Length: 54
Image (cartoon, rainbow, N blue to C red; front, side, top):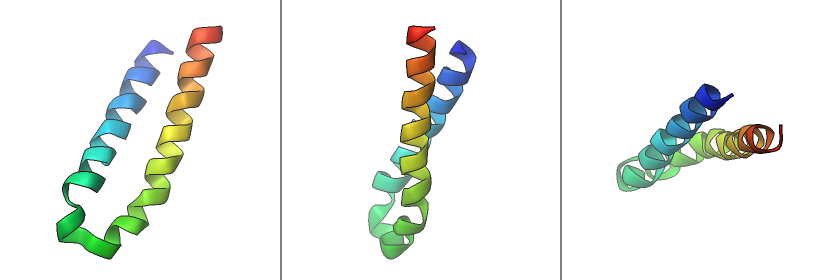
């Protein structure tokens, strides 16, 4: 579980940097990646919850 949390957290950070770092270049195309980023945030929080409470 710890390895999975590390992996999904790093992926979430990478996609977040991509979204906010290249916003000016991509403009409206960012909205195509935004649902994936939101899903990653939810998945990361669920993974962390399972790791903490199990």
